[in-house]
Amino acid sequence: MKIAVTGPESSGKTSLTNWISKHFSMFQIDEYAREYLLQMKRPYDLDDVICIAKEQHRRIVQAPFGNVVVDTESIVSRIWIEEKFGKHFDWIEDQIRNEQFDLYILCSPDMPWEEDPLRENPLDRDRLFENYQKVLEQMKMKSLISSGPLIERQKFLVENMMSFLHAK
Image 1 (cartoon, rainbow, N blue to C red):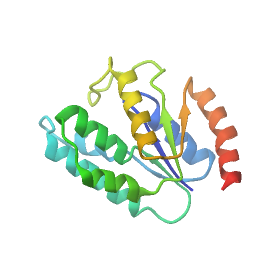
Image 2: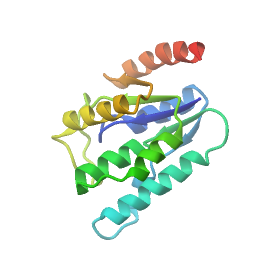
Image 3: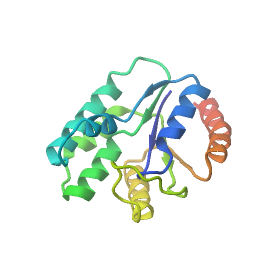
Image 4: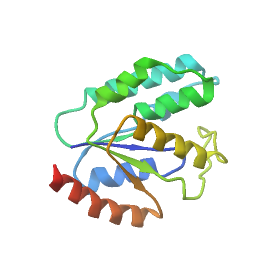
Protein backbone atom coordinates (compact mmCIF):
# COMPACT_ATOMS: atom_id res chain seq x y z
CA MET A 1 0.00 0.00 0.00
CA LYS A 2 1.39 3.38 -1.04
CA ILE A 3 -0.38 6.50 0.26
CA ALA A 4 0.25 10.17 -0.52
CA VAL A 5 -0.91 12.91 1.81
CA THR A 6 -1.38 16.09 -0.20
CA GLY A 7 -3.05 19.49 -0.08
CA PRO A 8 -2.41 23.20 0.45
CA GLU A 9 -0.17 24.70 3.09
CA SER A 10 -1.15 24.37 6.74
CA SER A 11 -3.83 21.78 6.06
CA GLY A 12 -2.50 19.10 8.41
CA LYS A 13 -0.44 17.01 5.97
CA THR A 14 2.54 16.43 8.24
CA SER A 15 0.47 15.70 11.36
CA LEU A 16 -1.67 13.25 9.41
CA THR A 17 1.33 11.59 7.76
CA ASN A 18 3.03 11.12 11.13
CA TRP A 19 -0.12 9.58 12.57
CA ILE A 20 -0.74 7.26 9.58
CA SER A 21 2.86 6.07 9.72
CA LYS A 22 2.58 5.15 13.40
CA HIS A 23 -1.01 3.86 13.41
CA PHE A 24 -0.69 1.67 10.32
CA SER A 25 3.02 0.83 10.76
CA MET A 26 4.01 2.36 7.44
CA PHE A 27 7.39 3.59 6.24
CA GLN A 28 7.30 7.40 6.11
CA ILE A 29 8.82 9.74 3.52
CA ASP A 30 8.95 13.31 4.78
CA GLU A 31 8.54 16.53 2.84
CA TYR A 32 11.89 17.35 1.21
CA ALA A 33 10.98 21.00 0.50
CA ARG A 34 11.14 21.89 4.19
CA GLU A 35 14.55 20.26 4.57
CA TYR A 36 15.87 22.05 1.46
CA LEU A 37 14.42 25.50 2.17
CA LEU A 38 15.54 25.59 5.80
CA GLN A 39 19.16 25.35 4.62
CA MET A 40 18.87 28.27 2.18
CA LYS A 41 20.22 31.74 2.93
CA ARG A 42 18.36 33.43 0.03
CA PRO A 43 14.87 33.49 -1.48
CA TYR A 44 14.11 30.39 -3.51
CA ASP A 45 13.61 30.45 -7.28
CA LEU A 46 12.22 28.16 -9.98
CA ASP A 47 15.45 26.15 -10.17
CA ASP A 48 15.19 25.43 -6.44
CA VAL A 49 11.60 24.21 -6.76
CA ILE A 50 12.57 21.98 -9.71
CA CYS A 51 15.42 20.54 -7.62
CA ILE A 52 12.99 19.94 -4.74
CA ALA A 53 10.45 18.29 -7.07
CA LYS A 54 13.03 15.93 -8.53
CA GLU A 55 14.49 14.94 -5.16
CA GLN A 56 11.07 14.36 -3.58
CA HIS A 57 10.17 12.17 -6.55
CA ARG A 58 13.47 10.25 -6.31
CA ARG A 59 12.81 9.52 -2.64
CA ILE A 60 9.30 8.30 -3.43
CA VAL A 61 10.22 5.94 -6.26
CA GLN A 62 13.21 4.57 -4.34
CA ALA A 63 11.18 3.88 -1.19
CA PRO A 64 11.49 0.39 0.21
CA PHE A 65 8.92 -2.13 -0.92
CA GLY A 66 5.94 -2.38 1.40
CA ASN A 67 3.56 0.03 3.07
CA VAL A 68 4.62 3.64 2.51
CA VAL A 69 3.06 6.99 3.40
CA VAL A 70 4.39 10.20 1.87
CA ASP A 71 4.13 13.78 3.16
CA THR A 72 3.71 15.65 -0.16
CA GLU A 73 4.45 14.39 -3.65
CA SER A 74 4.58 15.62 -7.24
CA ILE A 75 1.10 17.14 -7.33
CA VAL A 76 2.35 19.60 -4.70
CA SER A 77 5.31 20.42 -6.96
CA ARG A 78 3.05 20.87 -9.98
CA ILE A 79 0.72 23.29 -8.20
CA TRP A 80 3.58 25.15 -6.52
CA ILE A 81 5.36 25.74 -9.85
CA GLU A 82 2.14 26.75 -11.63
CA GLU A 83 1.07 29.13 -8.85
CA LYS A 84 4.43 30.74 -8.06
CA PHE A 85 6.06 30.79 -11.50
CA GLY A 86 3.22 30.33 -14.02
CA LYS A 87 5.01 27.36 -15.59
CA HIS A 88 3.83 23.87 -16.51
CA PHE A 89 6.19 20.98 -17.15
CA ASP A 90 5.13 17.70 -18.75
CA TRP A 91 7.84 15.86 -16.82
CA ILE A 92 5.96 16.61 -13.58
CA GLU A 93 2.88 14.89 -15.05
CA ASP A 94 5.14 11.90 -15.77
CA GLN A 95 6.43 11.99 -12.18
CA ILE A 96 2.86 12.00 -10.83
CA ARG A 97 1.98 8.91 -12.87
CA ASN A 98 5.29 7.21 -12.07
CA GLU A 99 4.81 7.54 -8.31
CA GLN A 100 1.90 5.06 -8.52
CA PHE A 101 0.07 5.80 -5.29
CA ASP A 102 -2.79 3.51 -4.31
CA LEU A 103 -4.51 6.37 -2.51
CA TYR A 104 -4.22 10.13 -2.18
CA ILE A 105 -5.45 11.73 1.03
CA LEU A 106 -6.33 15.32 0.23
CA CYS A 107 -6.22 17.50 3.36
CA SER A 108 -8.85 20.19 3.61
CA PRO A 109 -7.62 23.62 4.79
CA ASP A 110 -10.44 23.81 7.35
CA MET A 111 -8.06 24.09 10.29
CA PRO A 112 -6.51 27.32 11.59
CA TRP A 113 -3.50 28.67 9.70
CA GLU A 114 -0.25 28.00 11.54
CA GLU A 115 2.36 30.66 10.94
CA ASP A 116 5.63 29.33 9.55
CA PRO A 117 8.39 31.24 7.72
CA LEU A 118 8.21 28.71 4.85
CA ARG A 119 4.47 29.20 4.23
CA GLU A 120 3.14 31.77 1.77
CA ASN A 121 -0.61 31.46 1.18
CA PRO A 122 -2.65 32.05 4.36
CA LEU A 123 -5.59 33.62 2.51
CA ASP A 124 -5.69 31.42 -0.58
CA ARG A 125 -5.93 27.90 0.78
CA ASP A 126 -9.51 27.19 -0.35
CA ARG A 127 -8.75 28.06 -3.97
CA LEU A 128 -5.56 25.98 -3.84
CA PHE A 129 -7.53 23.08 -2.35
CA GLU A 130 -9.84 23.23 -5.37
CA ASN A 131 -6.77 23.05 -7.63
CA TYR A 132 -5.66 19.87 -5.87
CA GLN A 133 -9.13 18.37 -6.33
CA LYS A 134 -9.09 19.22 -10.04
CA VAL A 135 -5.67 17.65 -10.60
CA LEU A 136 -6.69 14.46 -8.78
CA GLU A 137 -9.90 14.27 -10.83
CA GLN A 138 -8.17 15.04 -14.14
CA MET A 139 -5.57 12.37 -13.52
CA LYS A 140 -8.21 9.92 -12.27
CA MET A 141 -6.42 9.32 -8.98
CA LYS A 142 -8.16 7.46 -6.15
CA SER A 143 -8.54 9.91 -3.28
CA LEU A 144 -10.21 10.61 0.04
CA ILE A 145 -10.76 14.09 1.47
CA SER A 146 -9.64 14.48 5.06
CA SER A 147 -11.27 17.31 6.99
CA GLY A 148 -12.00 18.52 10.47
CA PRO A 149 -9.87 18.37 13.62
CA LEU A 150 -7.07 15.77 13.68
CA ILE A 151 -9.08 13.31 15.81
CA GLU A 152 -11.94 13.37 13.26
CA ARG A 153 -9.47 12.88 10.41
CA GLN A 154 -7.96 9.92 12.21
CA LYS A 155 -11.35 8.28 12.82
CA PHE A 156 -12.41 8.89 9.20
CA LEU A 157 -9.21 7.34 7.85
CA VAL A 158 -9.40 4.29 10.10
CA GLU A 159 -12.92 3.63 8.85
CA ASN A 160 -12.29 4.43 5.19
CA MET A 161 -8.75 3.15 4.71
CA MET A 162 -9.72 -0.21 6.14
CA SER A 163 -12.62 -0.57 3.69
CA PHE A 164 -10.31 0.58 0.90
CA LEU A 165 -7.70 -2.04 1.86
CA HIS A 166 -10.32 -4.80 1.98
CA ALA A 167 -11.62 -3.81 -1.46
CA LYS A 168 -8.18 -4.25 -3.08
